[in-house]
Length: 289
Image (cartoon, rainbow, N blue to C red; front, side, top):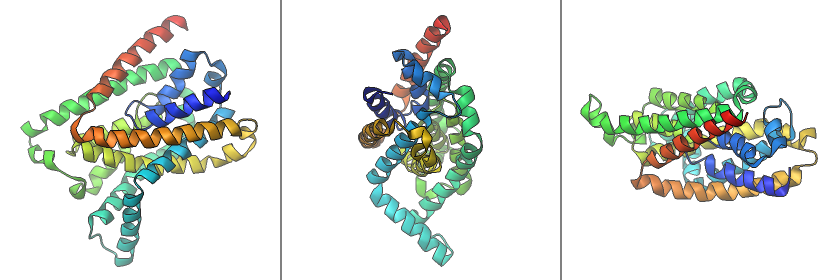
């Protein structure tokens, strides 16, 4: 892996992890498009230098999120500890903290058990391209359901906020993250759609999605840290550092942009991008394989 490749992949990770377009999907299809065959081959191996590289990128992305939301995380952690001490949930920060705990458990456990299987089986350019199309369809469906909600029994849910989300609904949103184990399905996109369906607005759905992504991504990186410090990292630690710095900067700028974007805008542009990009790549890879 060259330094140029590592920086490009780092920038790609930092942007696509938070934009609802699937970082894993893009990390699979972009090397194929650029003809980086060594990276393509390494992605589906059970052990490879690329795994160590991804560890660095994920930790860097999570740290960027942690820095951006640092004030809120201080309140959340303090709130959870306070609620444990008092044995009751009283404030919005305490409630949000426990909502995040509940939402983290399903994807965390599933990823721990099945991440390796999903990556080696489904992290192929053609499959990832097809799942990008599916991701675009999910984003469009979420927007359509959100717009139609006021006509049904859940009309009042349009004004719901994180403060009145119940724990069962947080579990549903967290469970939706499991689909992101498939390369091409966006973690942030699927959790935002789940939030919209449960009645949150775009701003609250995005904020909850970004907060929820932080412990998941950080825990996954720390869990696989031996890949980075062990033999798999030999010869590529400089590239890992370069890619990680690029990922951290891109992730910080991306979350700052998206927090503002979802104050007034929707998922529709990202859905159109995924549909167009995914469909084009399906045709390209199907005809060249």
